Image 1 (cartoon, rainbow, N blue to C red):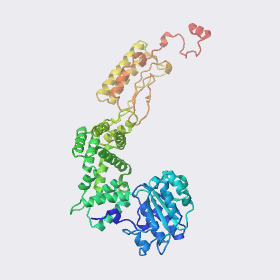
Image 2: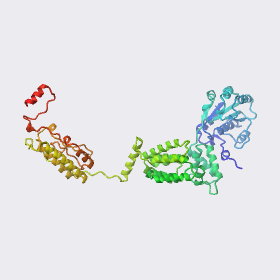
Image 3: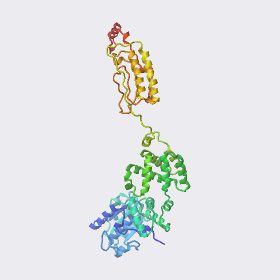
Length: 550
């Protein structure tokens, strides 16, 4: 028979306690200065060193050279309270789960009045203190508030909020925390070297994940792996199989299938997960953690190794390529879908069905709502980077319109609106043809020139702009991004366009505009007796009479 690993390597001094420096340093300083309180409350998650620290404190207080922050380890008290020692009658550990009533508190109070047998202090370590009933705490209140000089109390609990406030206010409260994965991995490496056990890379990351930051839980898992290992030591495959974690090959396969949008590959990976006997919920947890790692890799890039310390370098390289092919927006959306699905899997009667449904939701494109915009934008940017989208047409030379006739020149009046309408329909047809055939600048110039001539034939060049017919075609200047520009000499109301040539879709849209809207006919000067002048701004009797006389 062998002793459990966490018992063989239980710390004997405050310096041996890992990850709790915020507790051990103040306690050691209080021991140096002689400011030790009569009651302490140690709280925190299980397996973080609360009871062990209470024993070390008792050892420091009852050492023959103490109180001291470092026990000598050779006196009778230190030997009795050491790892594997017989214990001391002056250090009493009480399990509050079975001794939390009023009678137990009364018995403790009566015993505390007697002095220690052979040590300096009589120390009561009350474990699982939250199990003490309110009546039991009230029975202890007086002795905890004003204990004898030789009595010290240490309460250890995982739920400090259940300890009544009158007890908490009379103690020094030290909260313990979970141990960081890096410190825990280094500590376990030291233990494996001391035990002479070989291990493969990645095994300790499984152990720290299984332990969840608890030292005792992690050492129990490590002890189990050591007990079942062979001459080759701790293997990656053996640890993943025993602890139920998903193999990296499965995670890489499903991530790459998501990135490629390969539905068949995704469902093949799900079938492999189920056929291998893995827990679908554990697989979803591992998949969510992988997506989180990919988001970190995409955000940090080259510095991801400092954040993901437990990930090997070759795995980091694969994750960088996966993050690049996936996209940040798509990664965030996939993580949201998987996280929501993991919540829905709680109590599900068919975990495989839930897994398949959430994977199907990840594969669907984000086409609705605000959540899909980032994913679609990432997809378009990746397509542009890879050259899948066609480039925009290059800008050509700007065509020039014919010069305007002189200011005093007279214009023939036969064309009028009919000629202008015909020219407008002609420019629509010509521009559509130019757009479909490649849209050269020469075709566009010829089309606009025809409109210019027709418009000039229907109205004199001296007509104000508010009386001239207008034919407009909209086109974006892709080379400079400028708005519509009017070419020199285009006084007939024709808007000349900057290159490149018109796109077919926009020209077709303009050509469908009714001619009555494309060409607005005005009364020709030949029908008006008198000079052209703007209309009156008011429509009173005087203005109407003046109009009739004109």
